[in-house]
Amino acid sequence: MSAFRITLLACGALMADAALAGPPDGTTLAKQGNGHGVAPCMACHAADGGGQAAAGFPRLAGLPQAYLRKQLDDFAHGLRVNATMQPVASGLTETERDVVAAYYSKLPVPPATSPPTPLGNTQLAQSLATRGQWSKGVPACEQCHGPGGVGVGDHFPPLAGQSALYLSNQLHAWQQGARRNDPLQLMQTVAGKLSEADIAAISAWYAAQPATPTKEPQP
Amino acid sequence: MMRWRWMAMTASLALAACHQPEQQAAPSAAHAPAAATSTAKVVSHFEPPPESSIPHDDFGKQIALGRQIFTDTGRYAKAYVGNALNCENCHLDAGRLAHSAPMWGAYPMYPAYRAKNHHVNTFAERLQGCFQYSMNGKAPPLGDDVLVALEAYAYWMSKGEPIGVAPPGHGYPKLPKPAQTPDYARGEAVFRRDCALCHGDNGQGQRVADRTAFPPLWGAQSFNWGAGMERLDNASGFIKANMPLGRGNTLTDQDAWDVAYFMNAHERPQDPRFKGSIIETRKAYHDTPDSLYGAEVSGRILGEGVANPRSP
Image (tube, rainbow over all chains, first blue to last red; front, side):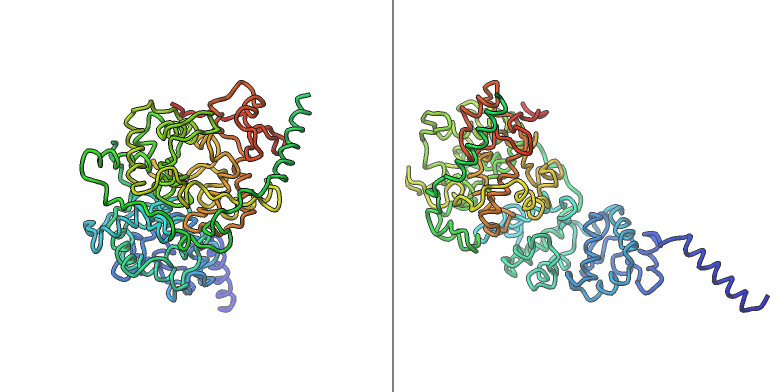
């Protein structure tokens, strides 16, 4: 048997192996990337999926699977413009996007690293979060994102516990049209009516809210 | 015989819908259906006092309680609520928003004679009706804390308004009758496109952390057949001015009528005034083209009601 034939056989065995193994699982994608150009998610979103607050990389752990999946598609298709995520999302196959979205949706929400201390204009923030600003046609954040910003269903992601930098980046992206993947243009409409002071206040506010629902006291 | 009567009724309904005069056309420019935005609309309306002006005394406590009942009705008026709705689901911004039946638009208009029950109603009695019908519950007795607090809240909010003069922005806008008779299939298309995102594929709404995030639009947890929102004129006006939330006045009038029809062509809890038969109940309380109670839609007569496990 020639060396050439041995190489061929070895290659064949490897390919068969790869075919049998199927697509990488979520853990592999998150920790090692997909092996053809996509970096491991944890490099930016942290090993526990909690993100990196200082850099504005969002928490993914515990977010709705359908929401995560849609974001990957939208990054790839330019409906959510982001120089880092565009090549990542484009480099993932459909199946890999499914797998990684499922993986992060099932990760437990990491405990907050810093004690939740709301900063900035908390009065303005609380008012926006719970009352809205109807004189400008702005509903309260929690009307769609749930009490305390814990998120509602597949389409309204949690705001609580995301970093102030990430939240304010998103609100600016909605305003500027860099992010336009919202259903029914709900967020573009709302963000377009917010002032810089509103954005600063509400971003700091939700960054300091607990990411898991707290039971409200009975009256 | 039965069948014939229903067909006749349905036919007359359709006829009446066609011949409805356009007397309900927008009374002011604020109602113009065009590309008006909610931002532009609000300017000329009565401005209710800011929440921060609720006094810090015993009277203020009742006002504040009224506000809590308004926004979290199932918690603060639990004994009288039989569904998953809160007052503010139909009266946005805690009852402060123009064109969303604000409390400052209602309070100065009572006492009032109401065709709904053929006598002069006090404001408190009007509130009782909300609990019986919209909340599918039972009326708090007159003098009950729930009614006192809600009335205090509405009174406080209306300070400075003239009595007996309907202010601009009161109630829901009256849309001109649609060019085409409201239609189930077109309404369903609007619903799937613009409403299901929040209200769910089956109109069931969404809950989170034991709170209603998005209200159920029909079914056991929604308003019953006696509520004002089962009328197509009310529902279309509310929808046009306020839905999708934060994007009011973006639907066409036709879309608003069609989707109101679709919403109200679903079963909901029985009218508590049920007279033993759908025909009699329709004759007594729903004899208008704006009600689908007793009408036949997709081969089914509406008005059978649905059981409500949470009914008090």
